[in-house]
Image (tube, rainbow, N blue to C red; front, top):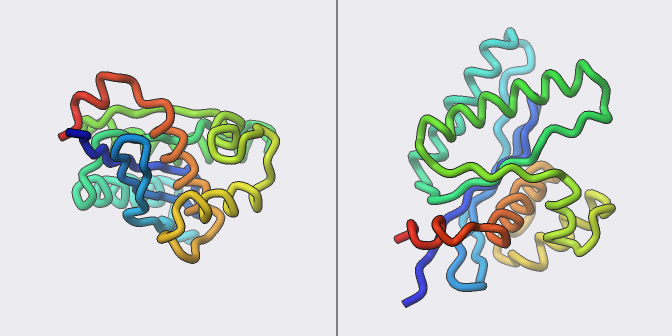
Length: 167
């Protein structure tokens, strides 16, 4: 009997953190849910990071994933942007670690390669392929599409022990 593995993908961001959940049964993927965490932009940095932590914790409690994937920080945007993005990513990863779910980290190029077939794909190409691979996902923002792409990438790269641990 083939087991179903639930995977949460996260596209980190301090303003908009995309998230997406897919179920993998054998080689088949099914959309479960997606959305965007939007911390209060007027709040202090610590409060915004706390909002991210609590929101990710809530997703974990609600969807109960057995594996997660998160995009690595893209540093070409400048040091200040990279630092803030890294802090948002850290808040999400802390929630994942506290929940005890294995976390796979993927470079943006690897995610694009897994979904589109090329590591140089544009955001629009990623969103198009996510919609093709998960037709029941419906309309989504680019942040949610990127998170679902991360979940798809995680599904393609799950280690055998993660597959055995799913029930």
